[in-house]
Length: 145
Image (tube, rainbow, N blue to C red; front, top):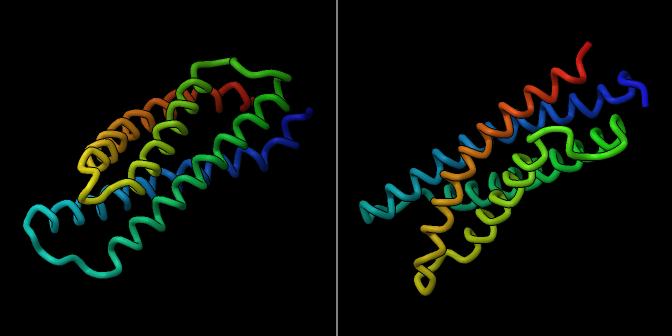
């Protein structure tokens, strides 16, 4: 396919990545607030936990959108996958994001391991976002004239 026909895909990817990182930042702040309130045995605003869940759902959606755009764009442009380390980095981010979302649904008094898994997966997700951003920059340079 012709490169200009793919520009709309790259715009979607750029916006999705920017919004994903923004959502991650909001989740880090709201999650930190939830953790602080829990450790200090203080009450938290009633809207905080639903906000955290909603932004988390948005992040999952954005990451899956990025996966779709990346696969579609790469196959459309090259005819196949596996042209850089961006694919394994991206698949790792998708996996960690889904693990984080799944573990969030398991957090409760009877499953203390879920909170640790959720926090740990979010720390790993930060590293994953850094890796996918760096490898994505290399990918973008291949498509630009």
